Image (spheres, helix red, strand yellow):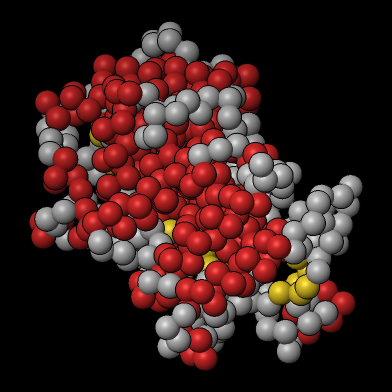
Length: 450
């Protein structure tokens, strides 16, 4: 029986993705992977990567390698040449130690130095300024160098670059490796190999949320998992290697996994409406708009608020329930439950005041306030009118005003305005339509709204 290699997760995205690709193909636990496993799977990828469709991908992943180097690509024994390189790495693997000089695992010593033809986004050996201590390459042990040959199996092709997902969650990494490899297996069985996983999405932010959507819909339970998500959007192409790193906050993932079942349709509408520059009357299917900019996706990745995407001021209606907004504020915006409840209650009181006194002008003033002082003055006038009219229902207490409505004064007032308007629209939309203050619009008509 072949000896196990004591492979462990390293934290290096390229090495780790290769490990999970191997785990998925072998259907065995990582510590159980053996030298014979590496050799058998090396044969498989040598068959796959030497297909024309995969060689086109390899220009962006392993340029100058034996797979794409003009000196070797025209040879009839290209597969054997590549497999020979892989087997040489396998035969050079030594047992793990307490420490080592390898930049990947730190548990074995580097026997050689590697450049961008084997390790993406490093450099060519002649340009020593790309490497630590002016070495002519990056120090990786044979095991990590070999494992990196498997990471292309997990890549998501996006336009002219690749997306590599890296997470601290084994569940996430295992799911995505399986998803990508199943797609490759499907290509092979259909006889139409097209290379790395490709959904035809060319905008990285949209592709990232396509990946997240598939993870959430996988049926796995994510409560308490708290996974990290780093997406490496890169090309290792010779003439212009590039890298952008996108981090999806764990709080955003938690929010998306906990969307109430009754609000999934609403959430999908909110996301759909967030696509920009779409002529919806001309849309036949999702491919007609899925590569357009999406403000919800962009703002979630950039840590910006998406509250305004939950409602429309023009037609004074909401696109979801308060429950979804509450979940978003709690999970993503880190607003405490007490403050959310106070704003909801004040929104209910404002709704009653507007409806009972037919004060559409008051609602317009709340909408049009463009700074903290103006908004605060609108609330002051409402308080004054309630007193003059003998209305004994308190709009808010001093503590509610200072602690919950405007805890940071000028810096958080917009958030409070958005939440109050949302609650008012949720309560009063039917009344506003009945009294012809607004028109009742279909979802298709709402999509056309700028």
